[in-house]
Image 1: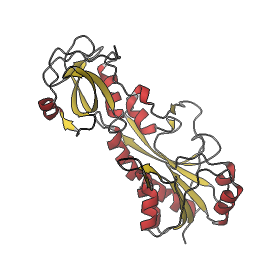
Image 2: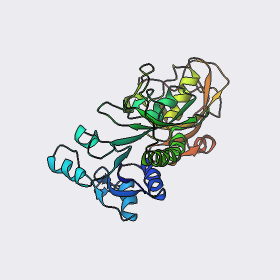
Image 3: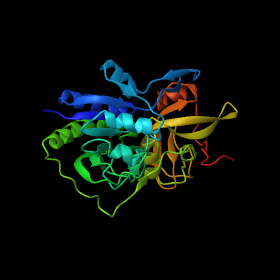
Image 4: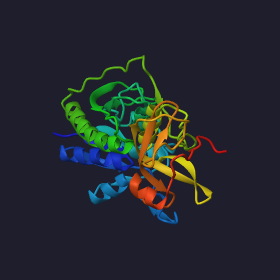
Length: 315
């Protein structure tokens, strides 16, 4: 006995869950993912999503609708006659016709401890806020934004220096195992559902380019959390004058350090930077078009002298 499943996902984060469902013996009727997007060095080649590529390797039928507005798309979904849909980072809003288009509904793997961090960027927002833990939740979807009842929770600790990329990779594997467990329970009618608490709701808005610049006018802990929450993508950055011209430099690693001074002041030769309170040491840096380097290697090619001031805003 197994469930027949429609799988819906797009990025690399979703792929282990797809594989775990197959390994658990469930039948994947079809895979839905976002359409191929322009990519390559010139942006001229259409690139299939990681889920699309994985599904093809597994010999699964793949559908890539732009949306579900057309009646034919909704009917095709229903005609798959699946028991349940599993959704992990699909990236499209699902109308009620899709949410109710399988016998048992749609179940979503969401990377937060709901109702905290509903929305698009829960991993980054948890770190940027300084949360000490997060997790993966399997939720039965309804018409709201991540508002449905919770079926299964797996908590994950967030280390003091853990980056968004590292947390992403950990949650990706935890989520795959959790969803397979949830579907096995659902198959045997042993998956309980509990309403989300009304208190503690926070929204994880999509990361905006305008918030990626480092503000050394904040505390050292806030700056550190900002850097690791945006590492490796899109990357926090500062601007410094290099060889007589301003240059943007990404920071993908940092640690708390001792030191005081005017915010943005370079206090030491190994890039300890003063913040409004305390200081941070920048440990991994990258120039535009350059390689990611440890700070010592970066400074050999791009000196930033002690006493330099890294402005928090363009002047």
